[in-house]
Length: 462
Image 1 (cartoon, rainbow, N blue to C red):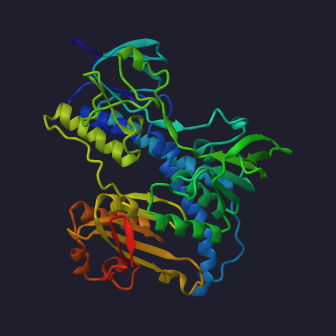
Image 2 (tube, one colour):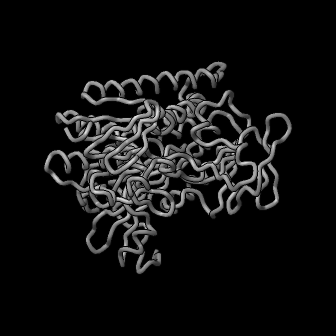
Image 3 (tube, rainbow, N blue to C red):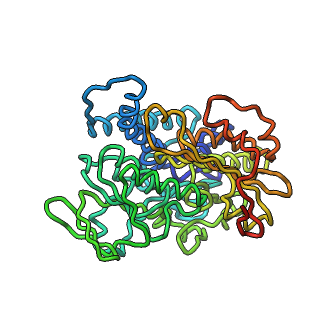
């Protein structure tokens, strides 16, 4: 045989594992290398452990709200180290499942760093040998940006570190205002940590609908989270004991137990040997691919976060499945990145699919906007002052729903279901003729009959 493998995958995250398993199941010779732990960012240091920590952070509110429903909760306490240990046990279980799935499919698994040495050659570090493959798939993902230009950046943690802190800090300031920063702010605040967000822009969650951004800002401040906008760190330095002094560009100095940088992610393409294979990247290091995930080198593909398309786990899996269908099943498929449901597991959480109002206003001459802002029923007896938002954005000419946004309990679950109808091209009339499920928060989505306002040529009309 000309090559050792029909396919060799570099990276054992969600995209890489899916491609390897499906290809091996077709009877191909497949190998995969991972230098860390199988499961990748999502399973080991991303969405899975993060969601577990989100659950942990909501219990204090549940205990408080239960009193309005007749419950009397006794003294409570929280053990950070127990949470970390239980999280690690679950992550390890999932990692084992990923590894076993690969082995069961017939994939050869390597626990090592792998680097390109040519268009068909891969060097395995632990074994110090080069293997050959007819096709190579790169799925190494990304890593948190640690802002090396910031003086004192080594005193800060990133999301990877936050899951395994030796103890729960009493205070933290998080730089950034994307979904990672916002979610961790909710986690730490829910666990009783004095929490602040620092962001260079005017409002958190850039790219999301403005009404959602504004309401979450208000809800976070109600929960005691301080949000500092239009400022950045000027430097970090060691404070008394184990604290960190964070110098802000506005002149304030904050001394906290932890500083966290949540300033985006960068691709893990450094020292990957891309130049030795002739694989092109953009100015930020992301691998350039065409609509079928193929790089400029004919036999090398890339999927997932390393390509800087849509950085979400289900997207990486979808891209991997399209790659397998195209290359091994004679069924060319291009990944569909349109109308992807997204959730931010803040507290309250956000679920969204489609365009924000601002995006839709640029795309359509006239919009009908339907919006409901109310207190969820679950908070009435609890007496909690927390609001819920539901918003539908409709192209007035076609009546098609082009955006749906929910902020409140179980918003992510609603967004996933709404994505099906919106992906199918549902019109507002379809929502209107759908019978409401009462009593539920979701019924608001099908009972907003009259537009709250319209937007014409980018300008709001009441």
